[in-house]
Image 1 (cartoon, rainbow, N blue to C red):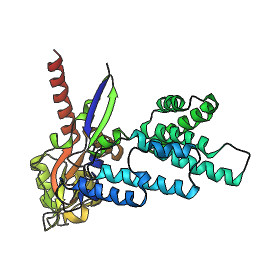
Image 2: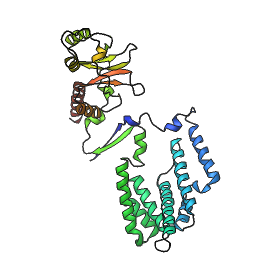
Image 3: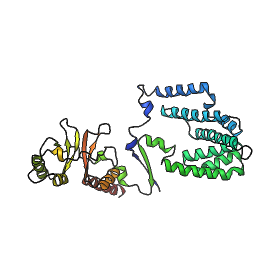
Image 4: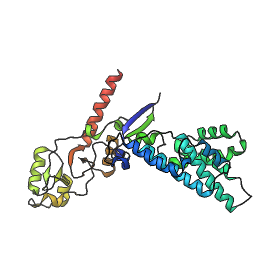
Length: 337
């Protein structure tokens, strides 16, 4: 059996529907605001509203001009985006077919203007465009081919349709890893992983493994104080805070060895600390942090707030990750016994 894991995606936890989330309005009224915007579009171009099957058929029958096809393409995408972003509900299959028909029809119209009488009518391009856009957005090229073949019952378009759908799917995967269906989950902070076994590290977050009671040093203190602290605590590194209690950097045993000469115990900690420091966020996975530690060849990362990177929340080390991993493995073994 395949296992599906939903894990928080830290890159998107702060960017859910950014435009409407910034509007100072109760969430109950935001779908109404989106509907008002879509209605305003429909006042001038009513073809954008509704399912749009009749509009698609008109595009397939070469009923639209090049300019109108582009206008309908843009406005349909805008209306679809406003509906979903405001919290409304809407389908994704028909809008993608609509956009594909307009895009393909516009391309076919332009091609017929440039090469009159030598290529197929714009309706054929609209049909192929429908399949290509749907295959790219849904990442389902075979489904797109079958749907379009069922609509046309015409074998003459099967080869260009197959080529366009496969090419669209390949390009879409190269440009963006998510489909139109999984993108909604990603923007809510979830990432879908699948396979026979899911890496435990992917399901564990920094906030569950980090140390919150962190011993820090002031950048105004001298090196002698730092040496005494290292000898007493047996830690090899400490976050460095400025006079306002904000994270200024990190100082480690390697900084002492490379930047302090014999007898320079009065040197300020701020002068030897590393200020361009790698950081971690509490909502990151341990997998991401472990890769960062390995690539930078460091042993610890300060954990900070995403909104304020100078606000120290904790510290995470390699040993913290290993201990949390071992604990999780033991718990998993117990659950399966």
